[in-house]
Amino acid sequence: MPRSPLTALLGLSLALAHVGALQATAKGGSRSARASAAVQERGKPAKTSKRHVRRGSIIGRVVSDSELRSSPAPRPSGDIRVYSINYKEELQTNIYNPDGSYSVEAAKQIAHVFRCRRTGEEHEIDPRLLTILSHVNDRFGGRPIELLSGYRFQRKTTSNHFHGTASDIRVAGVRPRDLRDFVHTLDAGGMGVGFYPKVGFVHVDVRPAPSFRWIDYSRSDPDSRDKQPPRGWKRRKLES
Image: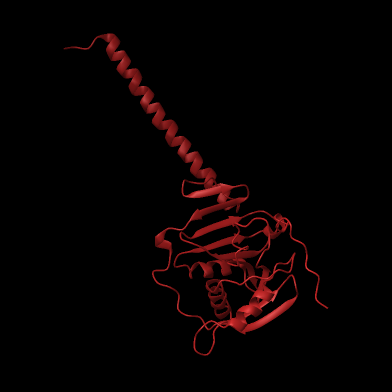
């Protein structure tokens, strides 16, 4: 049955509208891709996909299984050389006893160096984090690991720093980007790695899976964003 002129005209209009929508989508996608590439070229965070999280100056993402190590990293030497930027103290120790178990004495020494920079409170540091730091020590020839922030006795109790499972570090003579790239290779699951290019350090933590990565483009030290210790806390008098 032949179509009426009105039906034919309506069909042509719908077809033209569909073509126009496809062209607009293609142009929009092209502009979006060019804008994303241009922003990334300037070293600034681009718009994020559903796999990414954007909050202020921070852009982060969950790590896919294909990016993780297929097996745990080999056992490190256990040597750790760490220098506290806040307390101007250096510690060189080994986290293992001769029989291969973790050294309680070394753990106490590390907890002291990692103490909160505002309150002086100490907290046990997770052995998994210490293992990562020993790997860093081995990779970069025993150069001092400069500790910007270890344990934080603070109101934000969800922070990994509060639980003794995180550290903000850099290594003398090593670009923070190179340090970050090496730490990525240690991740078999359950790690957080943050890169702070403006301040110049790397955040490393251990956490429940999945692993997470982020870049923070702000110019302030994240340790300075939560200056208040828990409510009701009073500084202990120094022992004479």
